[in-house]
Length: 315
Image 1 (cartoon, rainbow, N blue to C red):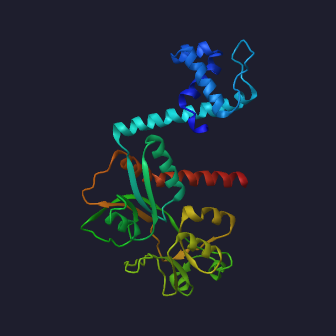
Image 2: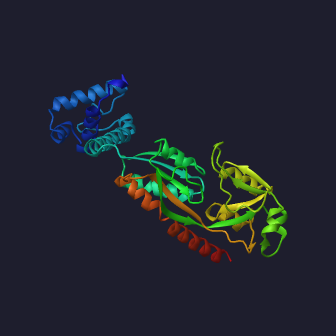
């Protein structure tokens, strides 16, 4: 019987409660009082409970009615929201954003950007893929994604087809676990010393992908295709490696990872680019998302200031 419940019956139920009488609900909904009475009776039959006291002069809710009233209001509210979304879709169509994001990109900032986009474009459909190395541009080339957040040092798959636009930069740090031999060395460490120990390097899991060797100190390497795996192995003290500062900031603060100083070896910030097919025109929602993603440096600075403030208070 619950399949027979209609939104009009629920509206009648809520209106009687709000107006305090069946006649008041009839005036509010511009319906005959008999129609309101019939709607309430049908609803009580469907629920198999009495919603109103029958011997009261006013429309007095039963215990069951009081319990079900919030649910009725919630269903009506969701229905109104659905109607508004349907109107927006009918007027403008369904906005879509399909984007591949490199796993090195600050995850917390990505989440905030998507939250802001959803607020401004509540009907937007998002196709999000997390990738590494050339994986994002592969998805742009095959049409799965319109955009890709790519690291600039990653070799371009098809320069004639894809163009890159600067997005932002992220600071990199060199780290290892506190039990690793490099952690015991005081002061800057020469590149040759790094080369004596196994370095963790994230690589593309595509067999034919062109590899990048930026920031590699020597031949002793373990290759992983996942930043999370690299992070766990570093904390396990097995190897050393370069990591985005935003990923390991908390570990550096609590000592579960140690930052290693490099001597005569400069490590550039990680530069992110937006990859797109040449001539591709951004939609309004895509333009806003790219603008938001590009603000990650400002977000990192704010986070850094908060971290310094917290450390100062702890001290």
